Image (cartoon, rainbow, N blue to C red):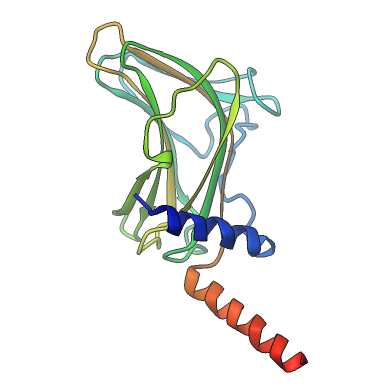
Length: 203
């Protein structure tokens, strides 16, 4: 879990250096291909995954549901920013979601930093807790920091998780997934110092 001070600094850096923010690095983040291209789906025999026209924007959104007790139905995208993102980079994640859950069902959004061999070097539950969706789309936004090794990029993962009760279920609609990042803090410090030097020279 990141400290409030660190996250505040990350948010300020993203705001200050908005001009250096890279374009959305998620492929098919709005599911506008009409399928799960770019995404992996993982579940049980009691999970289902589909792309539906009930979207927040555009024509399509992801819809998945889990009805097996004490299990997970997941959609995830790996390799986001591989070769472009640096360790410690400021990362912004945004998506729209809605859903329904019962008897212990919850929803999680997670971000993983991955090394070149596919190992996870940092994992984070976005927001630090489950997300409880409403029945209408809302936009969720998070600012965080990449892990110490992101040679393999980032993985964004959404999970519909059930409790141990037989009637537990979790259902989600996801749309408009965005992951952007800015240079690592060391790079930003250099940029900041460069700006100060330029200002002094002009004086």
